[in-house]
Length: 252
Image 1: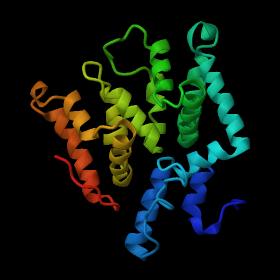
Image 2: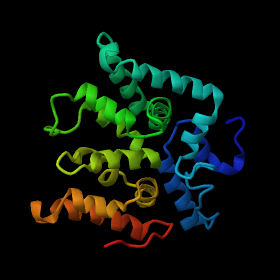
Image 3: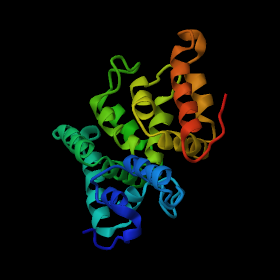
Image 4: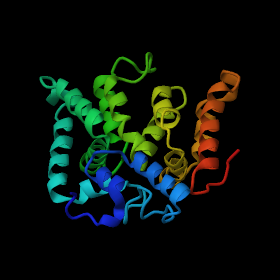
């Protein structure tokens, strides 16, 4: 049914590769297999972490490496680029069309497009598409009144299924004085997978050289709202790390 994919991946993994389910769902599925059926342990080879790129889900990684898929992904990244600045004056609505369709039908493909955009136009900086979207579609909202623009909200769906995209989303959102709580909520609080959220803490530190816990504390000082915002996020991170299959040390 899924040509070219070894059957050992299982139906959930194969469905993920072909876009039917997210890597988050696959991680949960694999964990349940271990818990209830005593099957193979969850590790980098079967936990949604791609070979050769330790923080890409299999589906995202394979899309980027598959020539046919990559060609389409590059076209989408180029079309997004064409909606930026003066070049997009007459077709600025196309960015929403692309992002809406991908967010609704295939968030993993959206994650791949964000990565391709960074490779083509940002020297590998995964915040490049987010910066460009804000610069072009959020010009008058420096202090993020009312939350991020719709384009960022759509792009956040990619951050719920791919670790590097999640880390980039958090890194750009956690800017003191210009923080984007809607994005942090979406990536951390509205992602039901403890395994994914726990993995994000490790990826974030590896990618940006600082602990996610520390960044949250600096961005949301306890004195500002009696610690409520900070406690919500840190509680989610500690809870995820405490219950995820792969044990990560608790941070205080």
